[in-house]
Image (cartoon, rainbow, N blue to C red):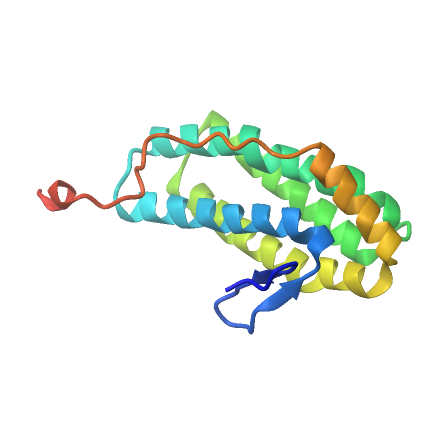
Length: 175
């Protein structure tokens, strides 16, 4: 449950994190990112055609991950000290995810989808537990308000993927 004016971030092996109002848009996108990871993993378990998983990954990249990375890199990075290890970690993860998605778009293999899912999950955990925590502890209210304003000016798309390949339908169990 969420308290008015706060966003609670749930992780399976930690207590909920009460996220500041200003960073809530990014945390909500992280929740969507974890759903993406779950859907890819379910697609693999359901033996979904890899071409469909590639299409979904490409679509999700275009509509969600790429704009999210842009927001983080253009809005958050300028407020951090130059060369800060948390920023370097974030950018390294972004680069690796970007390159992996490009590779998957050319030729999809199960192992690449597994690696991508694991990497995105770990990256989200890092940002929520370390990067955002640092920002909430070290940024002024005015700086966080400026971040929030910029995020609200460039919201992500609400477009949804139509084919629910991650749903295991009863007929899918037949040989």
